Amino acid sequence: ADTLRLYEMFPGPVEQSKPWDTNGIDGCHRFLKKLWGLYWDREGNFLPADVAPTADEEKALHKLIKKVTQDIEQFSYNTSISAFMIAVSELQKCRSREVLRQLAILIAPFAPFIAEELWHNINGNINGNVNTVFDAEWPKWDESKMKDTEITMPVQFCGKTRFTMQVPADADKDTVEQMALNNPRTSKYTDGKQIIKTIVVPKKIINIVVK
Image (tube, rainbow, N blue to C red; front, side, top):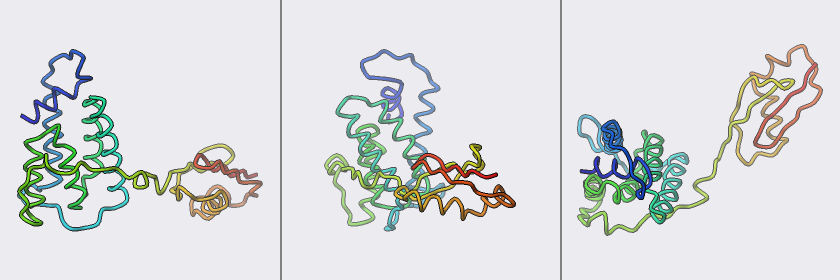
């Protein structure tokens, strides 16, 4: 029932007619199995635990909360489901009970039967709570949880990109420059050469000019 419900919302806006395609049904079913796999492994072991989520897991969750909340208000169910598919892929290693509890609430309007089962298990393991997921408070997103803590920047030598490196999102130009110059891979392109200047375009590129 949840698979069919998802499929009816997924192909496009609810007000538009869509072609019936069984391949789409299979895709929705695979997604629900992937969602289920966040909570149970193949041996039937319940996976959520009282562990703190990583920054990336919190980011994935809060991005999803914002997207789904706004999409529901606009009846954009198809884009919500796409966002769920992305988030579930990003949360494959997540074991945080709190993250997975909120995920069960978010999926409830789209897949109510599975959501109810997830809800009863994830709450029953805490305090025997048997209330329905539809009585749960809707999650709220936190913009601060959605910010990138690191960004990927390409490192160029005389305008040619040779590698990329991770830098703190709030790093200033001097810090980024020193990270690039101190990177072990830089020596491959600077040994025996003179560094003329280093150009840093914040959050874009680092270009080391040599001769």
